[in-house]
Amino acid sequence: MTIDITGLPSERVIFELSPLAELGVALHALAEPAHHPGLHGWATATAAGLKPDLADRLHEANFLWTATLSDVFLPYAGVRGGDGRPGTTLAEELDQLDRLDEERFVRAALEFNCSTYTSGDPVRPARVLELAANRGPRQLDFTRRLLDDPSGVRAWLRRLFEDCDEAFFADTWRRVAPGLAADAREKGELLRRRGLAEALRAVSQAIALEEDGARRRVHVDKLAHGRTTAVDPEVGPGVTFVPTSFGWPHLLVLHAPGWRPVVQYPVGAPAMSEPASVELLQRRMEALAHPLRMRLCRQLARGSYTTSELADTYGITPPEVSRHLSVLKKAELVTVRRRGRYVLHQLDVAAVARIGSDFLEAVLR
Image (cartoon, rainbow, N blue to C red):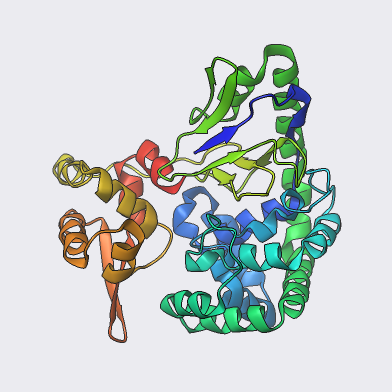
């Protein structure tokens, strides 16, 4: 993934905290503990303390922070005429969420159904509902509500996030915010003293500055493709780096056209599991030698998919997908379950973790 920063002054590269972004990754860690081996204790204790009503509402909307992390958690990046900076409190960022125009809010909330930002065309309700139906009944119901009453859904989400703050996040934020603030200050000072290239290396070894003559780009090494610019006139020039205590091993990049680029990077990394046996590791590495199977792993790490959905995503035939999935299943990297007449495939994240932290980070980044 690349962010074009040609002509961008260094003072437009900022390191700041975002309470709402941290709430988003905390909810992801709560819903997907297998992605975050070092947070099992926090996730277990937090889930046990949730009141039934809040737990039910979180389950109702958890697709907004499981397979993908919705851009609704980064509203400041999409507010037209804003300064592109996060709020200092969760309440301020929820006010920014209220300021997103309706089209941007709807598109951001529909990311879970694999819709993209590649087109400037209006949202097509029939197609959106078809995609949502593929994801499940909760997603379909949410999409219908969103299309019929976007203001009502936005208000519902705000209440949900406020209730999360009261239930557990306010205490969590008080605990993690000082460390995140120290990291942001450190990276900002490094940027001023030693330049952008050094600051990016300190953020992550997967991020680098690429320079070709006058052209400058931030390159983020992910098993995903996307490009954006940090000089979009709609939201003002700049790129924002946001530290997170809950994000590892994810390295998130907001690259939607017309939105300010945001890189949410993890601070610290938990210990990983012991590696698998040599024989099993060899079978798995042989299975992963094919680049398309690597890309399939990335998709399957974020949710369960049918063969047809994967074929549509990657532009190949269902039999080709089946052959690749067969190799991954023989390597014990993919699990299979049935939902009615559909056969769903998903990456065994625990098995991937046993291969090694480098591979897990690459798949989940």
